[in-house]
Image (cartoon, rainbow, N blue to C red; front, side, top):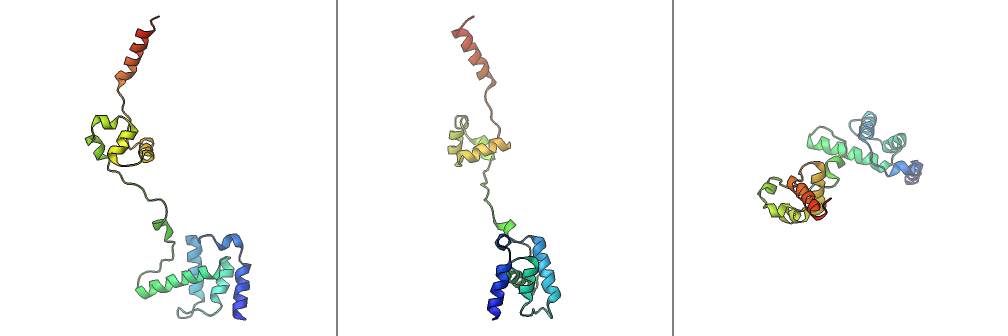
Length: 157
């Protein structure tokens, strides 16, 4: 009977809220509510279900927060129920030592393709460095003048 009631309570939780990650405010709110309802750091049988309904999240998430609290207390560290995701998720940045660029010969620095071969990185990574301002493009100012001179020599007015 108790299992059926718990399943019904879980179904009452909104579907869109069921799968989203808890914010740090929600986590601390759940922790404070569980702490207020606990007696000598022990919860009653229905406490997690009541708190889950109060915050409109699944019972599993509330139990996970309480498990984190118990782990922190056993290890003797301050209780931290914040999400661990900001530290461990996302794309890992590619680290390129830009001091090597000055040591690369001029002929290998002329085009992005040759520079990528010399550095051992992808073209998109190198292009992103150019757009972010980490690397500067240099071209000879004489080339522009020489091109104009060639045009004048070929097509005189």
